[in-house]
Length: 103
Length: 177
Image (cartoon, one colour):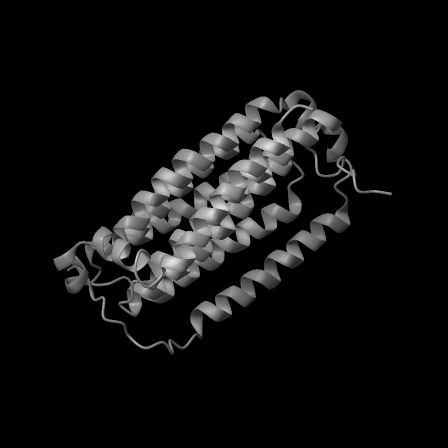
């Protein structure tokens, strides 16, 4: 009854979630939503790590996902600080309106 | 039980839930609604991690992602008020036909590539020592902890320095001059 889940299903789910995240990151213009889409892509990659580690009865997947989570947390802190700073300067978080680097 | 086990049925339900909630997250206009759907996605992913025998990661997912990161994002959404910062009606006209075609093209190509990889992969790795029975006899968290403080001690220290850099960077960036 408690058979293991086929790894292919996990990979398929991960691919679908990664695509949703990537397309959202490209098409949405609110940078905070774009940021959430990037987090979704990171989660899809985490799922592949866990599924592969489970299939190979290895523990390295959990360790790598732990590091990915650390990097995602740092990215969230610094990225959101940048958003707040940009909003203070430009009064918008629309990706089309933010052109601070334009010469 | 029929041919499908309990785990398979749970996985199917959770997979559908994850896809639906992430689609809702991407398509909502209001960023607060997006963030709430994202939290639902993270919870479904956490349960999928539990089904895949990664208890530590499942708990870390709920605490770090659904707890800390999403709270931070919600805070910033509240700080950045959306009357001026959201995707207004002015920008909607700017999304031209070309953008939509490019989006559809990117979706199709990326999805085709990823599904191709997922369906026709070959698992070349060698099986490790941590079978479910071995891990359960010691405890999942204990096993991960032993690896983190043993084999992966140096990357662990690097990660802590990265966190320190993140704290300092966030304070410096958001400080009023």
